[in-house]
Amino acid sequence: MLQIILPIVFLIFGFFLKKTTSPGFQSSKKFANMFIILGISTLVAKFILMYLKSK
Image (cartoon, rainbow, N blue to C red):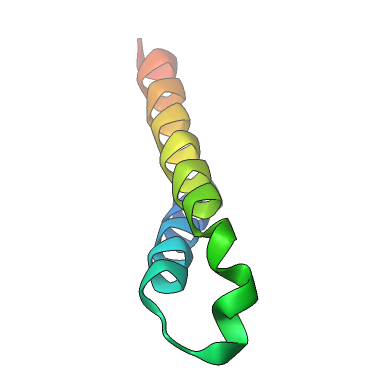
């Protein structure tokens, strides 16, 4: 379950960093794309592993 929740948290945090205008997060905005890519790739990999395990 953690393997599905954590990538979703990465995606939400990445989109939050992309959309925020808070001055406290300005230095972290460059990491937004990294979090989004990490979340998508981890989620896709987990679904592929679940599919392969079910066969």
